[in-house]
Structures are given as C-alpha cells and as structure tokens.
Length: 61
Image (cartoon, rainbow, N blue to C red; front, side, top):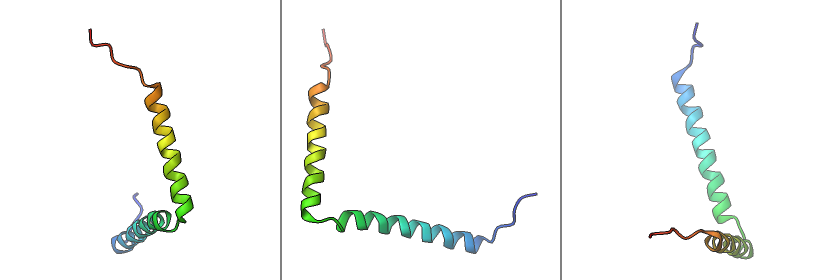
C-alpha cells in the first residue's frame, strides 16, 4: 500500500524548502564582504585562464 500524503502539507513543505534554498543563495550572494567577493572573482578568473591556456586547438586541415 502507498503511504497516504496530505497534499496541502506536502505543498507547504516544498514551498518552505524552496524558500530556504533561495534564502541560502541570497545570503551567499549578498552576505560576502567586498574583499571576499574580489578574492572569489580573482580565483574564478585565474581558473578560467588556466583552462584556456591548457585548451587544445582544433586541427581544421
């Protein structure tokens, strides 16, 4: 037998989980200090340069 689920409660639980996830993203985006944001963006740029430098060129002969 399947478990009986109250759809109203399930819908509210899903909404709460979605709200929690959205709040977590907002905290990560807006809660960082300027120095932390700059450090993170510099790290991302460094990694992108590393990947671009290691990329092989396609041979189009």
